Image: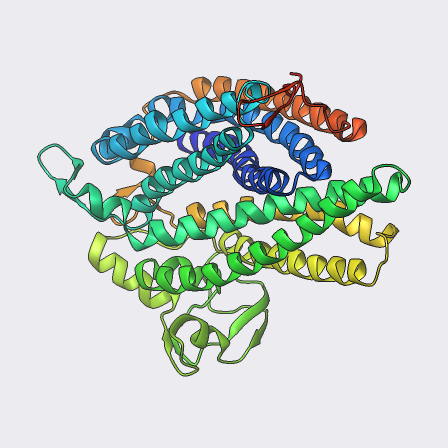
Length: 467
């Protein structure tokens, strides 16, 4: 009972936090590009875009920080045995994330907010780029730590202490798993922010066609182009990431395809039903594209893809008796949900760009599709996280520590109390974020501010954002 509650608590808080993180990373990049265009061209529309989307970035950043703090406490509270096991490995990347990356983000975000009327334009521009760089550095260190759980490298297990000990920090932060995860996450973050810009811009363009037409049309184009490029890049990186996972976590990828038997020329399953609740060999429905899975996994239409049954037998010999098959229904459908949402973003972006190229304003159908597009990457990100973590079960550290062995020796009542408190707190934060973002969207962009002075080099100084 304690284990199940601890997993639910960590899942709920992490999924909520991971909704906010990609938006922050992606929006920081978009705002930096918008401000760069303003500095280069002097076009006031780019200044308005910078400040409007910058407000939404700030709202999201503040709540992302609040929800992220909870993650640190959970390691010691609900997962003390896990923390003891991985502490020597996680100490360095998590400390560097807090001391270096978060310091860069918070410091230069403050300079960006309050530096409009105090800093030269180019120097002020550098602060938002450093915020974007800081968010990516932060993401990399976190992903490097998580990647070690997926594929432990650069460490050795000390049987005397029962702990993993750091052997090579360089191997930990440069593992292939970390590099692929970083590329996949950053491109997904840009697609997430792009879809948010598309959804808000299309909605405002449709609801108030005579107000800020140029602003929201230009924002819509930016969002569509960014979403298309980022979604395509996410898919490409994801393909190579999946090939790597097939080598280092073959059970996860076999479960993602509900592939029970090792097969040469395996087909890619599009839709399967029946037999996903446990591990029988009788899927009642399985619609697949012949040989495509083998090609995707091995670059050969006749390549061998290992199945669940062979892997289960191998793991029993290596690790002892037990069930090493993850929950198939969750693994199978989370993988397909992630891919479906990515495909949706690509199609939506292509349709939107085609409409704008033909000079057509967003209609009712496209506006509805664009508004749903705000949620599509959030669904994809959450599904991807569930696939990554649930597909690794029963391991919390692949091959070294099982999830059941990492939980704290707490009573169920303690976890019930904390999970209830966190859920209520996060619900209140969600209401606060939606209220603030909707308020900013309804208000719309402010007029371009008038300069309040110039630097000795003739660069304009502008009023602060007004917070």
